[in-house]
Length: 301
Image (cartoon, rainbow, N blue to C red):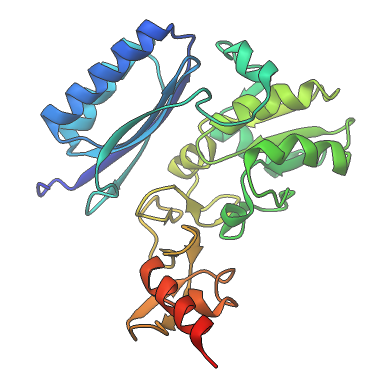
């Protein structure tokens, strides 16, 4: 990588692609990545695309132009950050039925070309949190994400996967007379969470446009506390959108971890998460060592 460092861009777009268009977009993105050394993951399907990619600044600049052309949206928003090294080992276009999984046929069929609900810019969100007592802030992310960072006073659904969010709302009976402020990492989960909540009878529902990543661009010392999990080898970003210095990916479950151990199989030092810590065979530096530790344990007298 050049002295300019690595540029990272996260983006999504709900757009109704035909099967033929999906293939055309896939080939265009793969061709660009091969020619320009782009890395990252793009989830692509009939309802649009959802991505985080990395490369030299000029590569990311040109990729943005290509994506805007492919989705016919010159105003498409990108969440930008930087790193010293590539946070992805390879490039992949992953074809899926949903670009963010809900397993809800109503949401999937809608295509969500015109997102429902009211999008708040980071400044509008910040002002509402600061001055409006009639708000309930709701995190839509999974438990391993909320454990390392949340907005002040936010309700944590403590869900294992996003498809459980609707059940959380139904079970916890969020107040319908208050304003619900919903947020996620980059905004895409809220695009589906908001209409889902509206279908349950909630009318005053708002979402943070661009998610935590966009908010931190404008308010690094604002209401978000901790770090934001980002689904790549940076693990998380701090309030300055710099790669985490606190967390490593747990080799067993892929969640953010801080627990230092000496591998019970090979003796190497490693970092694992607190959930894996109580499992003796997971006090290991890799899945391979975990397997051998488990075999040894089963043979012990």
